[in-house]
Amino acid sequence: MSIVALNAVLDNSKMQKVFELQGATALRLRSSTADERIAKIRKLRDVVIAHTEDWYRAAYADFKKPPGEVDLAEILPVCVEANDAIKNLKKWMRPTKVWPTLLTLGMSGQVQYMPRGRCLIIAPWNYPVNLTLGPLVSAIAAGNTAILKPSEMTPHLSGLICKVVREIFTEDEVAIFEGEADVSQALLDLPFDHIFFTGSPGIGKHVMAAAAKHLTSVTLELGGKSPTIIDASANLKLAATNVMWAKFANAGQTCIAPDHVYVHESVKDAWVENCREQLRKAYGTTLAEQKDSPHLAHIVNVRHTGRVKALLDEASSLGARALIGGGVSEGDCFIQPTLLDRVPQNARIMDEEIFGPLLPIIPYRDIDEVIAKVNEGPKPLALYIYSRDKANIDKVLTNTVSGGACVNHALMQFLHGNLPFGGVNNSGIGNAHGHYGFKAFSHERGVVRTQFSFAATLFAAGEVPTMIRKLMRSAFKIL
Image 1: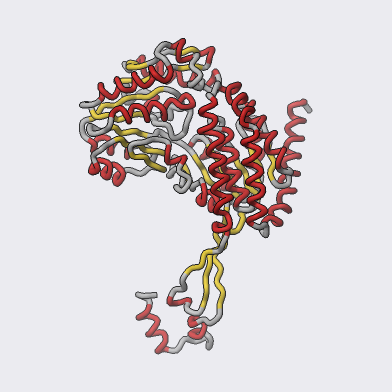
Image 2: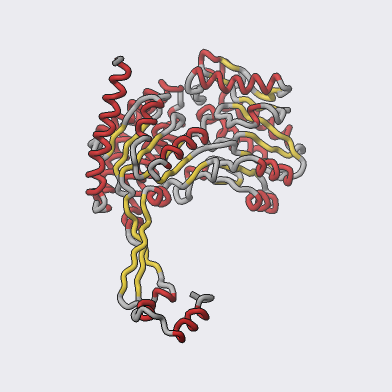
């Protein structure tokens, strides 16, 4: 047996052992108190904060992510998630009473929130800290055990996540496994009680198929081509500032980043000029200036840089032109923030999720045309509209479907902890964050307690009297 094969056998054996250990712990955690869960969440939050400088170094080593982005998009969301759970967990855990129906008069009903049990969290590489430890907070709040699989694409951040997790938890409660896709597959072969996956729709289908073998419940946080609409009434400076930040933060490697922009033809040129000025002030103008900017992240690796460059090259060969940017330094894993005009519909960039710093600009005349185009494709994870026309805003929100939406802003639906965050169909299944994350990792069990049952008296003799049957038939319309 080769060394590689032997290591795979040993790793799988270790996974199986940890999975079995967590089975006993999951049973014990069913009766864990809010105070016990809160203590673990508070410790996780405090250790994450204590490693702030380490997160900065690891994020820069993996893809030159600026410290400001680490604060805003990695550390802060985990702390917000933790603080929300610490503040509200006792209320979330409390059974919810429900009113009886006419048929259940004399009974009391309530919804209990039970831990799902052993949970698997598979995280992506674009926001490793946020998207590994954020769901972990929800899993702990709901009283579960968890096994984490961070991405191998960001080794420095993933290594630090491992250090933090092992510093806080014993592996019978929270364990973590690093490795390539074969590690994820080995974990997916285990009969978990719930799987929380963040990644692409393509891999999400694979995860769902693996979960189906064990009838395991899933939360899938996926992605897609999130459109942005800028109408003729929009505040163009605001729309430029917001969209340039939302698109080019993390070098466009964000699942809810604007993927393409529909801008009314009457304001297109003015909006592009506002974008040009915003990019100049934030990052400079030349390839060299932007590559060395301390405020711009790079692409995660050479392979992904090549993938994004191929989208740019193909679009250019089909007639697209760069209004802004367009420069590439493959060896530095860097592509300039780029706005593309005249992109033909048959270009791959109009069909695939870009996940990089390229932004196609599509002029339009009639908002109905835009709505029709949005509805032609799979339902997106996010939709953004910049407008001061209430009728246009309402028309877009009423006639489209997306996981979340923002009016005159972007990305904020993720940071709003009191809102459900999730996709729909191709962009995801289920919700996360705050109370919604707690419920994602909980089984909502209906419980009935009987004191006096009117319904039971009707059937006590085994044969329902004729008069009662007539009364029941007339009651069918109201019961």
